[in-house]
Length: 174
Length: 398
Image (cartoon, helix red, strand yellow):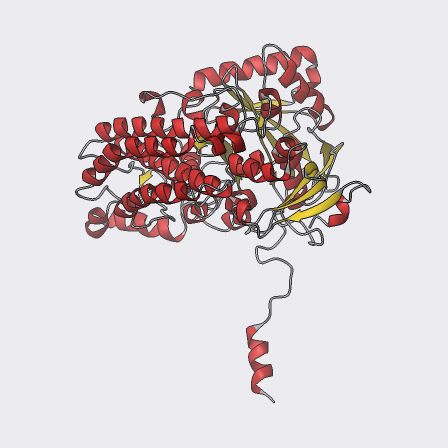
């Protein structure tokens, strides 16, 4: 299994490099999974290449999600999981985004299925997707403050939790 | 929240708010429908009513503690959720699970698939006005839940599949109820088919309704029976086998009509295929053998060892207090849930708690195609289309 995956990694990296040498920053292998790190400016073009190229044919965008590596910089790591149904192969595209400017091109023009995946990441991580047709919060209410899946967002949230000690004092002193 | 203004229509159309408390939405899904007479012009789904922040909670738990949270996402498929998460952690750790445990996992997950399809069939039929099918389906589902209770002690929130294997050995005498179920079920599936497959009302309500082309379905990232009813034989059990599925003989049912009726036929055929898999797994499961892999410091030691050996006691204590720390890295594993491709992405930073756990819920992503299915159709078909995608809102909102 590992053998076929590293062979696949070579195919993907080679095809992408022969198209644009700048498209592949790094190729990572971990537990038989291939990750191709792509520069932010070239993400949409690379994704299009992955879908259209006759040797790659990654026609299904199965997942897109983010990892926050706060306090490291660049802190956000966008991961796109692609599947080629005809070739029975998977690959992961990765883009690094800085905390002061978390903006990346939307992949909705390439895969319409990216719509809700990107809205979820926008909602929970606050990453903006350029060219997204409908970038609104999806799981949380529109007036929610902050982006809960960021590592610097406390698990309990920012809202004031009633202090039970205070409440007790108030109720016991008339 | 999506306000009515976002869907405001022209002078000719009106906006109808459907849900969140609508019985046919199977939970709390709200849809804004812009209608021209009885025809849907535009549909905007609005979700998040059941959002519980499971992914955030995972970051504050050790790897083993997350398992109980996974039960609560897709509550019709808790064993499948346990499985995908455990496969992810096992891949992160590079663990190999004993064959016996793998076969038991397959058997349980396939029973779960049948029970989930039964709930789907019963509720979908109720939505379309066929009341009695529901009673038949729940009669058999009850038998499956009894088997789960026997194996795991729980009917729904099983937490049975654990990192490196299973929580418990199958109980003594487990073969009789499973055998009885395997004997009974094929004729019961025939029974549902007699009620529905050639039923004129059923055909009238589902045939030609909710069409989506295979190209659109793939572009919208749809998976599972909905995609297979469009003629694409994409099933994770065949394409990326896990848990020894490559050793089992079964077919992937597909249709090409891609309407609600085709999706019904695919799911019924899948129940029959699942029965085949359960039968094979039933024969493969040895009476004796390990159900958990040996990995000191990661997998809890056996009870007797823990009571008698010093080192095992130390490991036991360490696993349940601080947990274990996988090497830094990311994995993404997928399994075929009853609803489609269920994925789990785990990122580790080398600490005992996961840096990030993300679930790719098939309900969430398939639901995104709902506007495509219902725009241009009649309002009564909206109900058929919601039912046919088979969503579980617990998984949509997580």
